[in-house]
Each structure stands twice: as C-alpha cells, then as structure tokens.
Image (cartoon, rainbow, N blue to C red):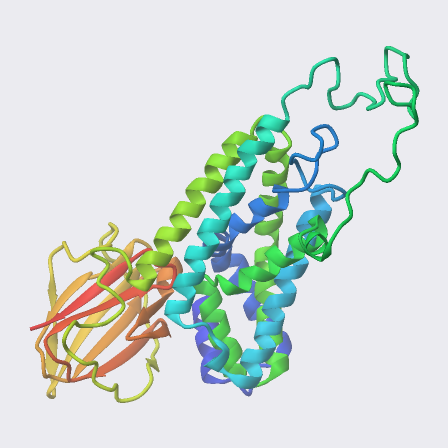
Length: 403
C-alpha cells in the first residue's frame, strides 16, 4: 500500500495536498525508512557522546558537558528535521537539480564512515579516563576533598589558598561551534547528506510535488516517521557511553564506520571487482531515449541470497519487436537475476520490478542517475561491454553484459 501511494503521488502531483503528502512521508518513514536510514545515518549518533569534558577527568573526554541525553538527542533530531525540511523546500521549488549525484553521495559516505570511526576511537579514550583516580579523587566526591576527610573546605585548595576563578579556558569561535549543543544540531543536519534508499524515493516525491509546501510536507512527514528509531538509538548509545559498555559502543562504531566506508567505495565503483562507475571500458555510453519511465510493478517472489558480484548463473534477454527486454526483480537480498547477457547493438530496456519490500534496493543508481523502482529504463543500442547498477546504499549490485 505504501509503495502504491508513493507511486500515485508521483503520477498525480497536483492533486496531492500537503496533508496527504505529509501522511505519505510519515508512513514511509515508519514502515520502510526506519531500518535503512538508521543503518546509513545512525553512526553519526555516536558523536553525541564524543568529546566534551568530564568533571572527574580534567577535561579529557566523556559525555558532552551540560547536556542530558534527552536534550542531546532532541537537538540532533531538530537538526535532522530542519535540514530535511529545507531540502524538501528546495526540491519542490528547483527540482532534482539540487539532489546529490551518485558519485558525490559515495564520497560523502566514505567521509562519514571515517568520521564515525574517529568517534569510535575517541570512545576508547573516554574508557581510560573513567578509571578511578588515586587518593580518593573519584567521581561523586568533592573536588576540594572536603567530602569525608574534612581537611579542606569546598572553596579551599590543598595548600589553603582559594582556588582560581579564571582557570576555565577561553572558548574561541571553533570551540563554540564544536560545543555539545551546536555539535548535536550539526550532526543531525549532516544526515541529509547521507540519504538512504527510502530517503531518495521520498525526495523524488518532493520533486514531483512541484511546490515548496508539498516538498516540505513530505520530507517533514518522513523525518517524523523515522524520529522514534533515531531517538531510541541515540539514548541507548548515550547510556552505553556513560557505563563500562563504552568500549563495546566504540567497537560497534568502528564496525559501522568500516561498513559505511565500504558502502561508499562500492557505490562509487572504487573497489576492485565493483565494476567501476562507468558502464563499459573503452565504449562510450550512448544517449538514452528519455528519462526512466515509472511503471506499475507487481508483487512476486524470487529466490533468496545476496547478489554482490557477477558470479551467479546469468540470465538472458528476450526480444520483442526489435527491442530486447530484460526483467529484473529487486528483492531484499539483491537483484534477480544478478547477471544478464544481452546482445550489443540492439535497443535494450531494463524492466525493474519489486518483490515484496526490497528495502534499499527500491532505489538504484544506473548510468549515472538514480531511479526509483518499479521502473523501465530504456538504454538504447549499446556497444560491447558491461553495465553496472547498484542499490542506493552501495550494498547490492547487478550487471548486464553486452556481447
């Protein structure tokens, strides 16, 4: 039902009011966007507990000072909501011209993965800072040692002199920007640069709305639908960072960062065996005979198993009226068939259909453009070589070999 609604909105942009678009975006976020968006963007939540100053460690790390966990997560969600609504306004006004291209998205994924890994490494530093300090200077005791010993008052140093009131370092412009509150907002706003497959589909609906209000409505609904998952994940990570589980949270952040980097490298075609960003080496890409045509798909079932490289049994194209058509099903575990052989020099159509809920595979990158499925992609007559297509998150890919 959700997929049909979004397809109907794309076909009837003028009749879809702002309230209807908001409801559609909300449903997309709740039903389809929670898992995929959390997988792509959730790593940035580790930055909420990175940095800051600890009262018991002399400013050597710890949770962001002055922000409770709910406040930090709320600021993150506010930044995320603001950036997505702003993107919806631009998409409704300007159209797809402001959408990020596949290569740029791939580069941003790599950068984001590196940042998440840095957050994970800093988590291990906070774990060392949490070690108890000698002579009873542990968290929870008065820094002036006036707790149980009673030797010094709260306003006296160990030598009897009053502590310096101007000991706090001055905060420069960069420190103000990277302070806990602005950092939480900035991390949330940065999620718009890392769209998952469902986000890209929602952005296409915003483009088809043809108005700033419609674009803002559908993106606002989508962000609202995914907010509960992000809030829960953020609170869990903050809680873990304040306990002995901080090291485990760091390991998870490192794994998430590595996964994000590898996804970006696959999406950009920068990994060996990923097919590269170009369709065929040594053969120019002929112009397509129009943009991808959105068609109505039907539900079906296919065999399971991930398709990540052209190593499975190849499918073949069927020819009708001088045009060879290739039917490919997008499933949760990849594209079926993952490898197809077609004849070079013959007009070709790729008919992508959906099998159940394919997750991130519902949006793919092919020929340097993003296509929301179901769709028919007309390629025209192509020379010998290989054409690669890949899901929007860089996880699953498929190949068409022209011979």
